[in-house]
Image (tube, rainbow, N blue to C red; front, side):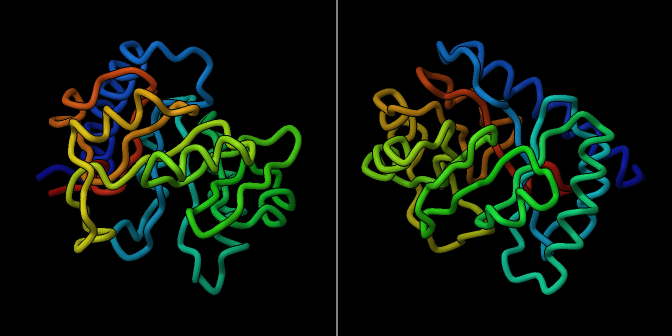
Length: 206
C-alpha cells in the first residue's frame, strides 16, 4: 500500500504533465502558473503532504474561508510553499495576503477583484460575463469552473468540455480548468487560452 506522500507525488507529477500540455496548446505566454492546488480542510486535511509533492512554480490557493485559525494556517502554508519554490495565494483576504507576504490573492466570484501592486490576482469565474468583469477589475488569471462534476459543488451545473473550451477561447483572461479535472480528462480541455488546471481531488487518493 502506497504511503500518502507517495500517492501525492505520483498524482502531482501526472497533473503537472497535464497542466504543461494544456499550457503548450493554449497560445498563452506568461501565465503566472499552470498548476494549482486549492486547499480544502474537509477533503484534504493534510495540505502539507500535497505541498511537498508540488513542482516548483506551481501554486497553492488557500480557501478554507471559515477556518478559525486561518491567519496561522496561512503563515504556516506560506512558509512551506516558499521552501518548495511554490507560489502561495490567499483567497478573499488581501490584508492577510499582504501581512504574510503572500504571492497573490484569489478572488472568489462573490468578491470584487481589487488587486494590489506587485501581487498576482486570480479570480473564480463561471461564465463569460464573469470573465469580462474579472478582467476589467485587474485579474491576471481566472479559474473557470465547474468543468465536470465536483465534490466541492455536487449539485452545480457543469460546463462540460465543449462549453468550457468555447468560453475560454474568447476569454479576455487566460484560464485554468477547475472542477473534476484530473490527469485522465485534462486532455479533453486543450484549447486557446486554457493555460492549465487547478484541482483538489485530482491530488488525492481515490
